[in-house]
Length: 190
Image (cartoon, rainbow, N blue to C red; front, top):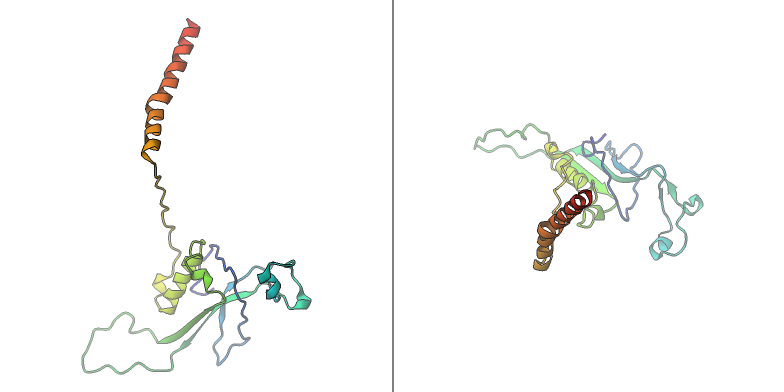
């Protein structure tokens, strides 16, 4: 329901994320709103030593401190700014569209920074989620959207020998086979 994730229906991935739990009721009347939650089938693993070593079975153990999902991986909070902007000097400037916007402090916390790294931006929704977060933090909600996919580079690189082979095959070999098959059929039927 947050503006960052409104209409967001694409997959995101967080390789080694850390869970977080927003404080119930908030702090100083500021309540963190969860942005990213895991599925109910997930869990938060408490035994990180066996997880990082790759030894042993990774399974849900509530008695060892594992928490059942959904787990919050990102949260956002906003609050009105307490500092008033400086008074305008004698120079009168035309009002900008942003001048009527009230100053606001915004914070977004993710339990994983790798989702926005170069290796994670190829995952379907990571780039959109990161760009939506930046748009919301900068109070430019018009930048929040699901961006179209970039066209993939589908060029083919061939050597001179490969190009000659393709040319011979398409201009001589395939038409020759068709001509030979037609001649064979004509000879059989006469």
